Image 1: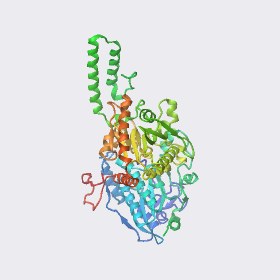
Image 2: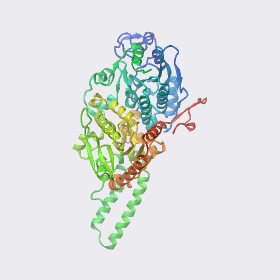
Image 3: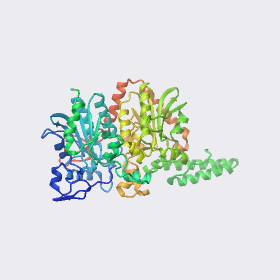
Image 4: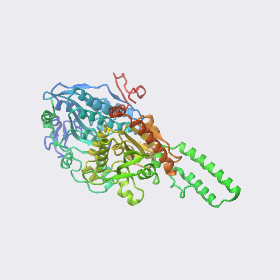
Length: 272
Length: 338
């Protein structure tokens, strides 16, 4: 259900325009501030590699299952064949698929970390994303480590892998349920955007749910809702702030504070 | 011979015409010649149906799954179960009429029955939101499933939804949250769970009550990650008859496809042309499958049951593992967990 691409990545060029405050800002400064607008604190989508650098202690990340690669079980063809789309996305991002998982340290605390990268097919979940996250959860249980997933997915379950994508929701959920039953801690960090089947599974199954400011989080897309109910949607509809107000997330955390906040929370949720 | 002919679908025009002629003939014909003519026409009709329904396109299947006269949850409750004690409370917001839950008896076996109801009349459909549930529906279902697990009542989920409701209230009250919670809990509820897609298996709205030890589909049901309309809109910008049909084809959403992808365990046969042509026959086939599954699952100790349920979903997905070949991706070499 990869829906319309939200243009949020940092474009090429020396200068860039912030889509929120419309200010023209120095691109390098945005990147140096973890992809946050220096004028209005707008949080741009962040590549998974930068996210690792932002969250984990330097050079502590040990990647898992880096060789898992997608294939095209349905022989899906839309405007281009899925296998060709995959190749293009792989060349564009340098990733095999939308998820990176592994182990690392946050201010000296060992954690298992999984990230979905919006840059790869809008961060949608197919078999590889599901498998990597399920394996990460299983290993977190075995190693008795906190599990942290950072979501960023425009469409949720990946349409091009059909029903197999939908089943990844159950697969990852099952692994998280086991982690929970074993007394493991799971922290979910929602980033822009977290929609559809990703929101309706692992992203909202955390013991603690954090969100970055201004992220779009929800089940159905705005357009679908607008077409169904034919009503004006509230201004802050499906934002982090909207979810906080309605009781579905625990804290909204600015990107610059995320590492400290996560470390602080982990200390409350560790029995060791 | 049913009193009224079913409403014809676009690919059934000639079948419908023949059925009308047959009904006319049956009303007027007399004598041995008439009997013979009727017999001949019946043979012709059967041959035509067999040919047509053997070549259904995925989109045709979607249309059958959505047929207005197709048996719904409450029809099957009536035909299959000895009683249904409906339980309404989600303990938080309200009674969602798109999901019904309650105690039922299947030939003496006590069960917890959960299912989507779409509604038949316009008023009923509006009340049920055409089978599109809100968060309270999933919360109610989960609440009743937990109750069932407490007393080890097996759970039967009959799925028939175009999808979870896309609306402002649904988002405000946590549509994604409650589907997520329901899916997670279903993976570990210590009692047998049997799920059958009886009509439409619309994405997360279906999976929200769709995690079970056995998952079956009625022959002309469909189960998909996105509706053909939604898929067509995204891929070809416009959802018309042609793009919807292409999307239905690409998504691999028929029972046959899902069996091949090892996402479901069994296809429950329907009467020729669909369950609406003989609801009783469809109900009998569904009942037989439900009973067989409960017989298989009830003796299993919970630890084994949950282990098998875990592995069932854990296996799903197709991908490549191990060092990448130099040129990379060829589906033919997929080792995946199929």
